Length: 368
Image (cartoon, rainbow, N blue to C red):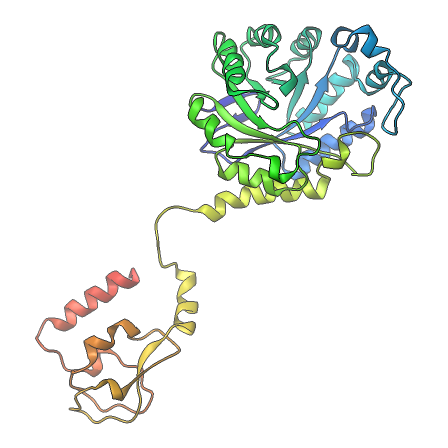
């Protein structure tokens, strides 16, 4: 897998998981609320915030645009009025991008049509995001790809062949592609996440960055996706689950986003490196809870040690239990009291350089 650079961002397997806070239309058409969400997402540690841009009259048929839309989440009498209420135009987008820049967080947006690509290009967008619904919209993908900016593409409700078709279409223009495993369920139940598809995408598209766009409730799935190889995680973000709108119920509130990012960062810390070590901070616990070889009774100098003379007790820090067979049969060089922690210097050595050899072996075993 490769890396992708854009704007202030670098997505790479050698860097922490790249987190996109998907604001979408959870701002409820309020610029003030959208600006607040950008600031909070930045405070939570997100790498990017993402909005959605549509030219609604170009995107929908007249019948769909004018269709009555009467439900608890509606912001208009028709679907078109509802979508227009939630849509930001030029001045708002300029303000949003400026706010993101001031808060050191990448500004991203999904383009749903050709006019929206042009709109975002004039705005100075540094990458393009396309929803799963446009994975088979090859003309739109090609149109955006000509600007040679990274493309993030969700892959929900698509076959592997369709993903490959979209991938090849973009690669005709550039190689900065991120394929996001996605399931088009709102919300998606855990038994439907099928996260191992991430491993398939890594295998099938080795030159692409692979990520995860989640509609699941909670923060576990993104952590699992990251551990399976996703370098990018996109999660919907809201100020309150109870707010009006269709996406709030499966979006993360600020505390959830903060915990999501915390846990993603902990993955890197927890995985560490594939080298087994005895760490300095483990030694006190090892000595306290471990066991050593102790004398069971007072023993005189010259006594030949038998198993019946010895016990295995805590604390550790002395000769470990696996040395028991090595000390049985040795002669004591000094007298020992009851419950003395046995040490090599208490015993006679079978040959002159044995003490040095034993010391060297102990140093290797303890890492000293």
